[in-house]
Length: 130
Picture 1 (spheres, rainbow, N blue to C red):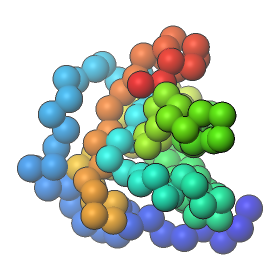
Picture 2 (tube, rainbow, N blue to C red; picture 1 turned 180 degrees about the vertical axis):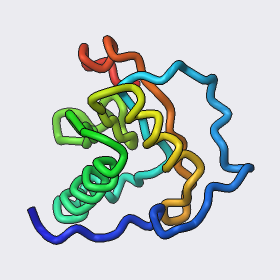
Picture 3 (cartoon, rainbow, N blue to C red; picture 1 turned 90 degrees about the horizontal axis):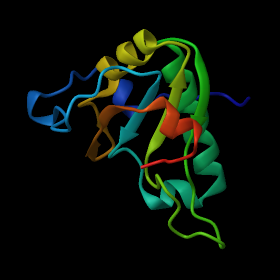
Picture 4 (cartoon, rainbow, N blue to C red; picture 1 turned 60 degrees about the horizontal axis):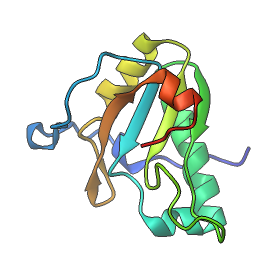
């Protein structure tokens, strides 16, 4: 693993009330979905993607055990895969995912504000990324 860069949304800034997610609340699950975080160019450049993947994984591990991390990328075969521009983080427990949600929901990442919500575990396991 290469040296890990600091993620901009972990720079000590507090979430702003206006940035809070307006999505319907789903009871905490082990799957946390991070939206409004990535841009297409983050996914098409291999080096940038690799750095982002490692940074997100390391930062999420601060909240608990990360079992898997899925970041859908476009490919020549599928330019618009399900879940594009979202990050799916599977934690060991719903409690760990809830801690991570509290840390990132409403935080700024570059010029965007991250929206962190939970996803149904069965849908995640079946690959139904939304």
